[in-house]
Amino acid sequence: MRPEVADVSQTERVRSAMTSSAISHGQTVRADIERVEVSTKAYAKALVFFCGIHGVRVRETLRAGDGGPLPPQVTVIGLSVDHEGIYDIKNALITSNGRIEIAVDDQSSVVPRPRALMDIFLGA
Image 1 (cartoon, rainbow, N blue to C red):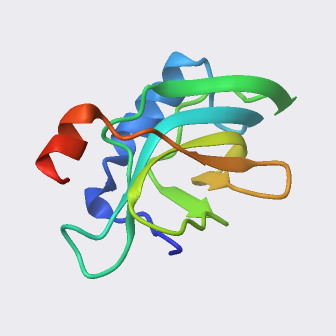
Image 2 (cartoon, rainbow, N blue to C red; image 1 turned 180 degrees about the vertical axis):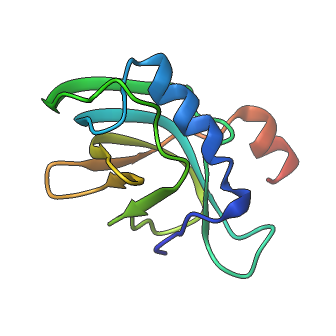
């Protein structure tokens, strides 16, 4: 699956998490994003959902930002998973000039999160 970002992806949550981590417009960082959901439940194609993210943890700043607000558009490049679920994206390359671009590259990893007991019990 190569999930996409759509209007329903709740991109405001990733922008808010980036702002909380002091990431501004024009900045490029390597960062971890916790609890990104990939799902086809609501739509026919796989989508990325940021509604449950627990934050963006900056590992390294590659380029300083200009202090301006983050752009509203978000895209994810290079994310590929075998099945629906919740994932942590480790060491993603994030840029924020014109649009927020979250890139999963050869230095990144995508780690499945363990399912909650309630999800297993309910068969979700």
